[in-house]
Structure formats: structure tokens, C-alpha cells
Image (tube, rainbow, N blue to C red; front, side, top):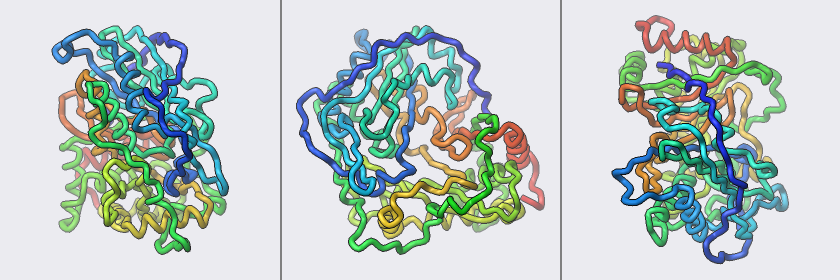
Length: 450
């Protein structure tokens, strides 16, 4: 079911002058290479996340200022994660390297004349006034020569606060970012060192010598040969968030044939959204469409990556077909494609991607006709605790690529039921068609074309 967008809130945020928070102790000055997964073109972007915390007097034995606590915890954590306090430089062949300068990360102290309750009973992207809660400090929005993290802590009138972060994606994926934030939480609660020490070792995800592409990687097809753009960039976009609870998942699972009844919730939801979205965009039946599934490949390694590795370890599994086949076949057709795509991601597949980065010059993943999905239900954003308990909401602050990507975020609806929320944006008319198709699947009975 579609969740209502947040009410239009008008509130003022008073910000202090942005400052750089450096490591609390001296750290090594050195140069550290990113891995060949880290510095691909598609990850040279800034990703916002946001956490909302309630004031709970039963948790706190004394009145503490979240800004002071988090600023201090950040400085302590950077002693261990000191590359985050450095700056990216561009090396030979577009290779990125971290100069560990110890300059620090950008930090903003702020106050808002609003309470957490005014944001509503259920928090989900898109968030009102996000630009006020995560201010884009001038001259900090680049990939190289800029702070690698930007953090804003905003106190609320109710005693709660908002913790927002902008990450340079080349440094970490969602798992790595949460590891860093969990370490900050431990420091904020009095620890002297993180329980999981950070591991750099980006050489473990470097290209082989000689390089050798051994797998098919349709996620990196040459976009220059494509002429059709399914989503015109000048279209006015509609932003909706869909909640999938047990009722909705069961409604979709009834369309599965016997051998697919046990398919994963991720496969089921992705098949549903991909198909509804493709029908809604009304592109030619002959056009190719694909889903790029971000797969955390940490468990694919033998021997495993060291515990504490916080670099990017996600690659794309690709399901590809034509518009006509996807729309005319039963929903199980898309599920089969997704299962195959996920199963194709092996350690060799990851190494083949790494080698391809060197051979093709670190290309961007294929965007035209693509739908990018990332499952964050196990990323643990909702467990980051600075001493005020777990957040009311913790996770992405928006889409990575509007109109192209969706995150799967664990959440509850207004009735308190557990489920998954999926933000999605499409041109306004396409969104109306998308919702109609989704209603057919979730509300209507089984029909022959499903």
C-alpha cells in the first residue's frame, strides 16, 4: 500500500558556523589507495542518510547535549578511522587515493523550532526540508579535495535530535558506513575503542595481473550506443513510498507457481516493482530493460574478508529482458530472472568486475532502461545508538538516483506492523499508471496476464 507523503512542514533551522572536526589524537600521515571497486565512476557520488532520535528521560540519568556528545565521539572515532579525516586525490589513470591529512570531517551544529512528533507517526523518505537538516556547505560537495563526511546534528524543541550524514560513497558502502556510525555510538556511550576495529586492506579488492574478464557484465554495457531515454530528465516527478507488510507480501506470493512459492521477499518485491514500473513507463516492447540488484558480496570470499573491512563490497546482479516479455509474462518470469541474477554473483564474478574496471577505465553502470534496487533491511541503520536509544527512523534520506533507484528500508506502518518501505519516483502520469498496476497485484484477484 502507498504511504501518504509527509505533511508539508515549515520550520526554521538555526545553524552554527560549520567546523572541521579532526581526530582527537595525532594520526599517521600517509597515502592509501582505494580499491578498484571503490573508485568506479558509479560510486563517485554523495549519499545522504538520516536518523531521528526521541527524547527519553528514562534512558538518560543526566541531561546531556547530543551535539557535544556526538562531536566528541566523532573526534575519538576518527582516531581509528583516520582516512575519513583525509581528502581524496586523483592519481594516474583516474585512480583515487586518500591523502590522510587529519584535516577532519565537516560538522554542523543546529537547532530547529519543531518537535519530532510534528514529522508524523511514520517516518520515511522523502523528508521535508532535508536541505535544512543536512546543509550543503559551499565548496564541500565535490568528490576530490573535499571532506569525506558531512555531519549535521539538529536539536529539536522536544529534546530529541536529528543526526544526518552525507557520505562520499567511494569510501564505504552502507555496511561500512553503519560500522563507522556504530563505532561512534560506542564512543558516545563511553567506550575507549570500537568493539570492531576498522580494517583498510583495500588491496584485497584490486585487479589481477594480468586482468581477465571472465563473466558477462551487462551492468556495464556501453551507454553511448543507446538512443532511447525512458525517463525524460525534464519531466515533473512524483515521489511515493510503498509499504509492504505481511498482507502485501502474501498477496504477491499467491501469483507464484509452486516451484517459486519459497522465493525471497526481495525477489518477489523487486519482480513486482520492476514489472509495474516498466508497464507504467510505456516504452517500446522491443526495448531492453534491466534490474541492477546491489548484492553485498562479503560472504562470497574464501577466505572471508577481515572482520572490520569497511570499503565497498557491493556489485550488481543483472536481470535483463525486453519490455514486451516482462509485461506479457507472469510475475514468476521476473522472479526467475532475479534468482539467476543473484546466483551469478560469486567471488569470481566480483573479481571479474574488478578487472573490468581497469580494462574499461572505471565505467559508470548502465542507467538507461535500468531500475537499481538496494536492500538495506539488514544494514542495521536502525541500531545506531549514541546513548539515547535506537532511532525512531534510521536509513537513507532519499533516492540515490531519482527516477532510477529504490532502497528497501525496514519500517513499521501506522498500525505498528513490521514491513518494508520502498521510496520510488516517476513522472506524474507514469506514477498514476504504476499505482494502478500495483493495485491490480495487491488488491485485484489473479488474472491471466499476471
